Image 1 (cartoon, rainbow, N blue to C red):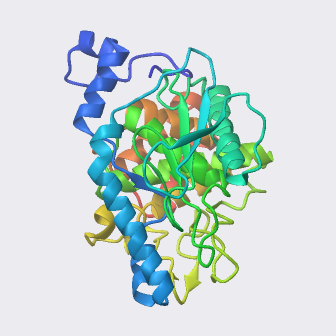
Image 2: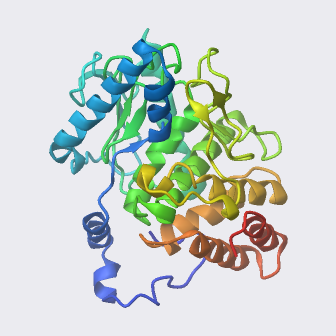
Length: 375
């Protein structure tokens, strides 16, 4: 989408027909064709793997059931993945469904826009969380819903039996109830809701390929805006925030505070069943294996910390300056195959354009990336 914060073409260096790119609809169509959105889960595969290896018999069976449910959905994805329901311009439209612990989507409607609270806490949390996400992007970046064109926000709760995950499937949000032993319900953390819905923003903008460093950036941008939505709702400055993704998801039986820490990657949990948080905080510890699509949920710790360092160095409300820089990077500059170095260069350039060359904001961005080893 065109920049809201500075003028000039950011597409001029692309070897593409300018008439083609002038049409927003064609631009988005092309991106969707080139980089279809994967199913993006909040709980990474390495945690599920640890549960299968370390959990008791019941926990292992739940984990295997979760995997089967996810695979069954992947098999049906074509029928739902390309469907998008539009709302009227400038209109927030939320619809919450229940799967009634089955795996057929979207399920039965239980709450629509403007309808009063229900007795179901998961329904109400999904409704309020999707609304907070819509309001955040609208108020801060003048973005019309997730796709920028007024997309309706559909969410399904009570997916599957003791389903330990939440995911964005390309057209809607889906939340499990958790098993009650390791995980609580997945609507409990507003940053998780914001994280998953931001995957919808990414698929419509930079369309970062879900593998390797571009995939880790995809995950990181979701963490960034998920945490900013949480901070905005709580009216927290960068210094006041906890920078934890998924706080409240883990039960008291788990030795951990959250799924990820943007402030200190690798410290969110260290548990006999879930294992130890494997996220690196610096490039020298970059995961180079093939699991998790090349470590998309693992290596996201590096750009996550870069954003945390930027936001705290600038100070104040993180969505005002650091968030603006990252949003413009996602929507204006990054390409599907962009890596960490590209993200560092782009965010530094945007900081200079917005706040001046050698400004405190640009120095904060540059120092942050240098600190995590991206140069």
